[in-house]
Length: 387
Image 1 (spheres, helix red, strand yellow):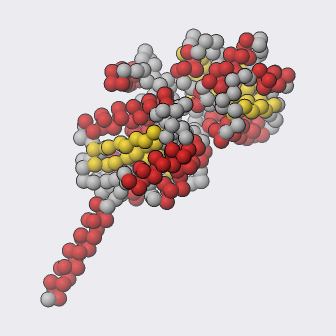
Image 2: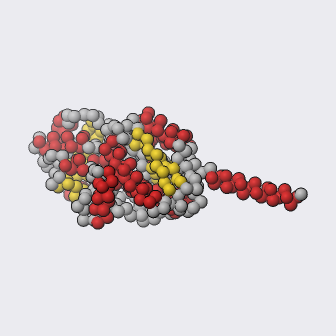
Image 3: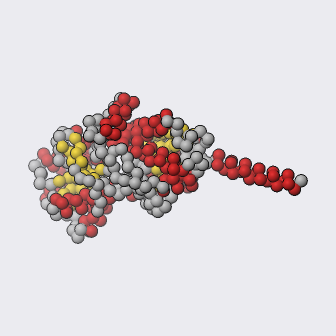
């Protein structure tokens, strides 16, 4: 009887262990369920929709090849329309109803920030959000992974380059008064202090503003020879073209990767406009065969040319797949975290900076490069820069 009881106890322990493994949220023997919330219907829908396409392209190819360690990836996407309340609702659904294993490429700084508390409390990793804010990896949390230079890093690298290489002396900032815009201001402020100079002038605007004459006049009167733009697309195009129409030509404007989009380059009068970025534009006639192949496949599948959103989504999916593969067949939250931390020197197909993680490293890279609009296209003009 004693031997029988011992055997039963052993079987119970095995069953408990097997049950615990089977209960890893979002994971079955054949499937890994991932989630994303992004803008599919609001002001950022062009980029948000493309990021989903990019993820589907990469995960689809992985599934066609048999999946990851025997499991197929299923991606559930929710639209938040670039509205925080809708983002919170989307997160709650993904976490509590869909029981996703992780959230990948979630769109928007305020939307990610609003979801972090409940998401992290539920043990759901936040992977490679469509935001370069420092809050995507700070404060340090084992469940938060970001893969690129922050907006602040980008502006610090830009100031360092323009002051040291171009002899700029009067650095100014024009930023939208949002959490995103303040990241740009912080970058300018921190790097100016490091170089022993002061910001010459600072102006703010609302994301919805359409007339920039007054702030531009203020900056011009201050003698600015470099303006850091805390802007996205339209509020980059209008100030730059307005300044040039005013005859203000002895000044350079540089924005972050938030403005590094095809539409900004193709707008009339944008030649000479600078932006920092972490990866190349996926032009169909790129010199890179990998980028050409990506652009061709994407266009064939979605009947539209890829933009930077597509690139970010594709890379986020590929990095996620790398971590999942490293985790091995026994996929748990802990094995996945170790799999992510094992990523060293990862290079995407778009020639972005090398990405590495570790036990205390949740920002995969902090380098970015400078590009300029020339003949309606973005042209990369520097190697990866830091500060």
